[in-house]
Length: 147
Image (cartoon, helix red, strand yellow):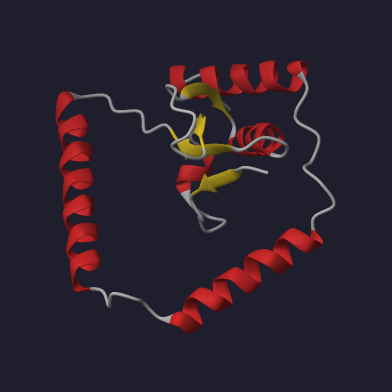
Protein backbone atom coordinates (compact mmCIF):
# COMPACT_ATOMS: atom_id res chain seq x y z
CA UNK A 1 0.00 0.00 0.00
CA UNK A 2 1.19 3.49 -0.84
CA UNK A 3 0.65 6.84 0.85
CA UNK A 4 -1.93 9.56 0.37
CA UNK A 5 -1.14 13.11 1.47
CA UNK A 6 -3.60 15.98 1.51
CA UNK A 7 -4.57 19.05 3.51
CA UNK A 8 -6.71 18.65 6.60
CA UNK A 9 -9.20 21.47 6.17
CA UNK A 10 -12.16 22.62 8.25
CA UNK A 11 -15.60 21.91 6.77
CA UNK A 12 -16.14 25.60 5.98
CA UNK A 13 -12.81 26.18 4.22
CA UNK A 14 -13.17 28.06 0.93
CA UNK A 15 -10.37 25.87 -0.45
CA UNK A 16 -12.74 22.89 -0.54
CA UNK A 17 -14.54 24.45 -3.51
CA UNK A 18 -11.38 24.91 -5.57
CA UNK A 19 -10.28 22.49 -8.28
CA UNK A 20 -7.83 19.85 -6.95
CA UNK A 21 -4.94 18.03 -8.58
CA UNK A 22 -3.24 14.72 -7.85
CA UNK A 23 0.54 14.33 -8.07
CA UNK A 24 1.58 10.68 -8.09
CA UNK A 25 5.19 9.61 -7.73
CA UNK A 26 7.42 6.91 -6.31
CA UNK A 27 7.13 6.26 -2.59
CA UNK A 28 10.85 5.67 -2.19
CA UNK A 29 14.05 6.56 -3.96
CA UNK A 30 14.44 3.10 -5.48
CA UNK A 31 12.24 3.76 -8.49
CA UNK A 32 13.10 7.25 -9.66
CA UNK A 33 10.75 8.63 -12.29
CA UNK A 34 9.03 11.92 -12.88
CA UNK A 35 5.79 12.33 -10.93
CA UNK A 36 2.53 12.34 -12.86
CA UNK A 37 0.14 15.25 -12.33
CA UNK A 38 -3.57 14.71 -13.03
CA UNK A 39 -6.58 16.97 -12.75
CA UNK A 40 -8.26 19.21 -12.08
CA UNK A 41 -10.93 17.36 -10.13
CA UNK A 42 -13.38 18.19 -7.41
CA UNK A 43 -11.86 17.30 -4.05
CA UNK A 44 -13.92 14.17 -3.25
CA UNK A 45 -13.19 12.77 -6.71
CA UNK A 46 -9.47 13.56 -6.43
CA UNK A 47 -9.27 11.83 -3.05
CA UNK A 48 -11.14 8.75 -4.29
CA UNK A 49 -8.96 8.45 -7.40
CA UNK A 50 -5.74 8.91 -5.45
CA UNK A 51 -6.77 6.38 -2.83
CA UNK A 52 -7.64 3.83 -5.52
CA UNK A 53 -4.24 4.31 -7.18
CA UNK A 54 -2.16 3.94 -4.02
CA UNK A 55 -4.27 1.16 -2.50
CA UNK A 56 -2.31 -1.63 -4.14
CA UNK A 57 0.96 -0.01 -5.22
CA UNK A 58 3.92 1.53 -3.41
CA UNK A 59 3.22 5.05 -4.68
CA UNK A 60 2.72 8.42 -3.06
CA UNK A 61 -0.23 10.57 -4.09
CA UNK A 62 -0.46 14.21 -3.06
CA UNK A 63 -3.92 15.75 -3.43
CA UNK A 64 -3.85 19.54 -3.32
CA UNK A 65 -5.96 22.48 -4.46
CA UNK A 66 -5.16 24.52 -7.50
CA UNK A 67 -4.79 28.12 -6.48
CA UNK A 68 -5.96 30.09 -9.49
CA UNK A 69 -3.87 33.23 -9.67
CA UNK A 70 -5.05 35.99 -11.95
CA UNK A 71 -2.00 38.23 -11.78
CA UNK A 72 1.78 38.14 -11.61
CA UNK A 73 1.57 39.76 -8.18
CA UNK A 74 -0.58 36.90 -6.85
CA UNK A 75 1.92 34.35 -8.18
CA UNK A 76 4.81 36.25 -6.61
CA UNK A 77 2.87 36.39 -3.34
CA UNK A 78 2.42 32.59 -3.40
CA UNK A 79 6.13 32.14 -4.13
CA UNK A 80 7.06 34.45 -1.24
CA UNK A 81 4.69 32.59 1.11
CA UNK A 82 6.20 29.23 0.08
CA UNK A 83 9.71 30.58 0.66
CA UNK A 84 8.79 31.88 4.12
CA UNK A 85 7.16 28.54 4.99
CA UNK A 86 10.31 26.69 3.88
CA UNK A 87 12.50 28.98 6.00
CA UNK A 88 10.20 28.47 8.99
CA UNK A 89 10.30 24.69 8.53
CA UNK A 90 14.10 24.74 8.31
CA UNK A 91 14.30 26.82 11.50
CA UNK A 92 11.93 24.44 13.31
CA UNK A 93 14.00 21.44 12.24
CA UNK A 94 17.20 23.09 13.43
CA UNK A 95 15.61 23.96 16.78
CA UNK A 96 13.97 20.56 17.27
CA UNK A 97 15.23 17.98 19.69
CA UNK A 98 17.33 15.41 17.86
CA UNK A 99 15.00 12.57 18.80
CA UNK A 100 11.71 14.45 19.05
CA UNK A 101 8.92 13.54 21.42
CA UNK A 102 8.61 9.77 21.63
CA UNK A 103 5.07 9.88 23.05
CA UNK A 104 3.78 12.00 20.15
CA UNK A 105 5.28 9.58 17.66
CA UNK A 106 3.71 6.55 19.33
CA UNK A 107 0.29 8.25 19.53
CA UNK A 108 0.40 9.16 15.84
CA UNK A 109 1.42 5.63 14.86
CA UNK A 110 -1.34 4.08 16.98
CA UNK A 111 -3.95 6.43 15.49
CA UNK A 112 -2.78 5.61 11.97
CA UNK A 113 -2.86 1.87 12.69
CA UNK A 114 -6.37 2.12 14.17
CA UNK A 115 -7.60 4.06 11.15
CA UNK A 116 -6.02 1.45 8.88
CA UNK A 117 -7.79 -1.37 10.76
CA UNK A 118 -11.17 0.36 10.42
CA UNK A 119 -10.89 0.53 6.63
CA UNK A 120 -12.32 -2.28 4.61
CA UNK A 121 -10.71 -1.08 1.40
CA UNK A 122 -10.55 1.98 -0.78
CA UNK A 123 -13.86 3.37 -1.97
CA UNK A 124 -14.73 2.79 -5.58
CA UNK A 125 -13.17 5.50 -7.74
CA UNK A 126 -15.57 7.84 -9.54
CA UNK A 127 -16.83 6.79 -12.94
CA UNK A 128 -15.84 8.56 -16.13
CA UNK A 129 -19.30 10.18 -16.27
CA UNK A 130 -18.92 11.47 -12.70
CA UNK A 131 -15.48 12.87 -13.52
CA UNK A 132 -16.72 14.56 -16.68
CA UNK A 133 -19.60 16.14 -14.74
CA UNK A 134 -17.02 17.39 -12.23
CA UNK A 135 -14.92 18.84 -15.06
CA UNK A 136 -17.97 20.74 -16.30
CA UNK A 137 -18.65 22.15 -12.81
CA UNK A 138 -15.00 23.21 -12.46
CA UNK A 139 -15.05 24.88 -15.90
CA UNK A 140 -18.24 26.72 -14.96
CA UNK A 141 -16.61 28.00 -11.76
CA UNK A 142 -13.47 29.11 -13.56
CA UNK A 143 -15.38 30.91 -16.30
CA UNK A 144 -17.87 32.55 -13.94
CA UNK A 145 -20.85 30.54 -15.18
CA UNK A 146 -21.38 28.64 -11.91
CA UNK A 147 -24.69 28.86 -10.07
